[in-house]
Length: 456
Image (cartoon, rainbow, N blue to C red):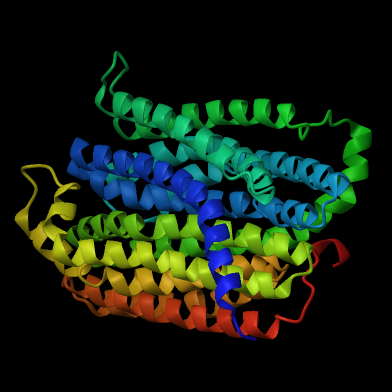
């Protein structure tokens, strides 16, 4: 199948037009996350050490629920491609019902999440800080699930600028409350680690209110009664059927990073601090790629709805091209200015050894960013074609069956040597590339398959 110059250029324009607002929303979230991590890093060395495990543990769990709720974009996208207002309205309502149920299930896990830090062998003071954060996480997670479903509805309709505006406002509020509640500024109490979680809770709730108003104005927030829920149940079940594997895949990615943090932390406290800095720097490169992946996903879903397989393939290649430009630029910055980036996450009296070891890790982060870029975009395209189950099994086998056990062996054999963190990142990068190759093969084999979720 040959790509024509005209069609590929058009695909590039479509990817840029629909992905840039999503990337912008991801970047606003990245700014919030970076402010959060920088605040906790500068508040104390204890909060620096605790921030990595706490945040990653919370997001590993929350991401399953948000990932499952996000599948509504595939249904809305395909319905939009079919030019069916009835299917769009039904898909949106079913997605909101599913998101509400998922959010309530997440809140029910609060006692379990609060007890997770006690399973580790880290210092009691760090465990207590992690517990403070994880005790609040299920509540802001509830609103994150609703927000994800709402944003996915607009993204599926290719109205990606709406989530951009809502997210930017929400994250601005989040930054204000996070800085204020961590350090006790702007007339707010000083709460350290707990203040970070409460700031996220307030901003997430406000964002849900804004989305509710916008959905109502768009006619996509119907009055959901018992009868309508029963009528939506078959479609909600279908969304759950495809959303659960998608949520598991997203959760496995987050959980894998969490386990990675725990395994590297086993090398020692210094290794944990170095790795937390590396994780934050890595986010600068990969979070916008997730936005391009979402943009690619909704375009592919719309093309599947239009029964335009060639257009779907063009969208995938165009998304890879767009993402490569950004990732290439970030890799250059990491290689040329590593010290300037690392300095953002260290206070003035931090041990110089942390900066020295972090520099070595940052130098190899490009391997993971490049591999993740390909796997993320191809995986998103496959989910848009209703192949979320296959995506899940590939990640389970290679990330959890091979990559993490090898990282565990490396960290166990490290003998406290901090430079082993570099090898751990290289191992993760190699297997992320293997996953990307499997996704590419699956996408190639699915090129003649309809992928219509309404007929599955």
